[in-house]
Length: 276
Image 1 (tube, rainbow, N blue to C red):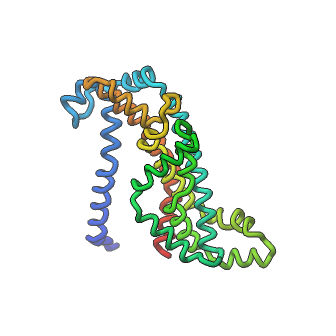
Image 2 (tube, rainbow, N blue to C red; image 1 turned 120 degrees about the horizontal axis):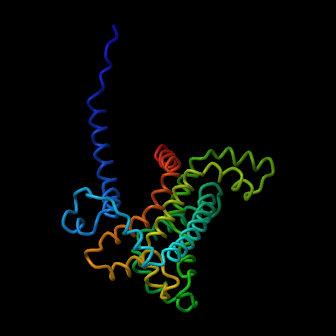
Image 3 (cartoon, rainbow, N blue to C red; image 1 turned 45 degrees about the vertical axis):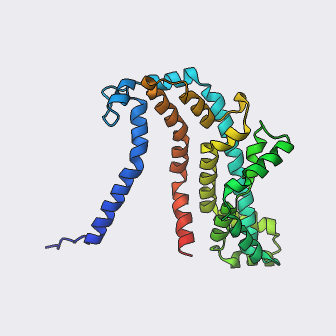
């Protein structure tokens, strides 16, 4: 006779809480996709009900009325450029602050943390004046260059790289490896989890950014998806709300796909930092 293994009630409670959290988290996305294939009249009169029939006319109308390929291209250029630059430069700075002793390292890091407490709104006017004087208004440089460096990204990279044993880099220095070689061949491969986190955060921030493009991209040929959606929303009557939901689903889908492929690295990065 085998005794039945009793599951602790605390574990059952934890599973229930996690299940509830999963439902609350995923329901908005499910609601968005559901309304994107629901007839417009049902969205207005039965917003919470399942669609009586599935129709993809909203997606067809979005591509017919919006230059989605141009909007996707512009947004992708911005998001990829910002993600690559910010992630790489943050990794460089994080490596210097975590593994290379130099005079003033601790005060410099403390000052960087202090700048994180300053509201970003205080920099809006000085940043705009500088970008205007440089002649970057209306070009992607106005968004890419200022976003190439982020104090939070540097902080996250530094905290993770401090968990990498210093003996690895010290052994490489004894063998004659340069700092660049150590960074590229040892630190970067071991930092893939935090690089994935930085890539997701930077890509999401650039992809969802509305205020930056609204402020600097004043030409329709440079508009991003967020600006295109805002303009499109003002031209769609209430009975065609399905088109808004379809456009929103198209904009959100790449972020879901990106996180799906990088989720293992994200969990590993936060676990390593928390266990430090």
